[in-house]
Length: 346
Picture (cartoon, one colour):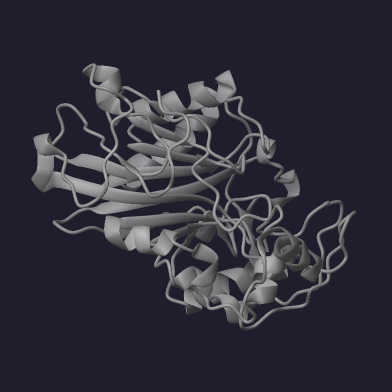
């Protein structure tokens, strides 16, 4: 099984018995390697087709943790307040100096596309039908640092083009950083994302907005319907959950079968003819490789309940991908590549 697939490589993915095939840009296991015995190491570069279902190919780009705060924000054209309240740094520009010490001079101001590097070119070559990013940064000028947190991520609203340049169909917001600057920071984030013409999912000004999926039309009809959920295991405080009349993120209280039934019900209610349902979940420890049995069981239940694909993140590096057999779809992604890293890069 491939354990670390670089972002510029694509893995073929066929759903036996379905009219549509899926090609996912990311770190996944080849379903044919599970079902049919072909090599799980076989990768391809776009352009290319899944031969068994070429005309029904749907390509998804699923991006892991996108962190555009700290030093990234400081080198972009409209840097915000550099203040940090971290144990090792009080100024975000310290991360720029560390990065330059390790990698050489960084242009200032850098262009909005600069943080993505060669990934943008590869993404344009892949030409995915739908792009989803997990946004782990509050977009605000607020100085209302959430108490009790060791790290706060904040990007200036003026730098939103660095997200728009990748043209995401949806930005998943149910993370442990979306309320780093309080509910005002969340409301600012929602307003900036919407103002840039982007879809936010997984957080909102109230429970109705936070739980509303993003529906992205795809060529040939149908939509990719995206839900975003967060869990306490990723570091999301319990008090950040949405509620009627209260801003927050869409949080799962646990990973029990009873809890899984709610997202399954929402997915079934939202899905129309020809639609594909993707559930994006922020869960698990940082920088670890273990995937708990409760996560595996929860993911299997969602797949068996009608979810096509599960996009998991939080670890800050790739974790093994695994194919999941089920009525509705065969794939779960764990730990897609993190972009715009925070460790020794701006």
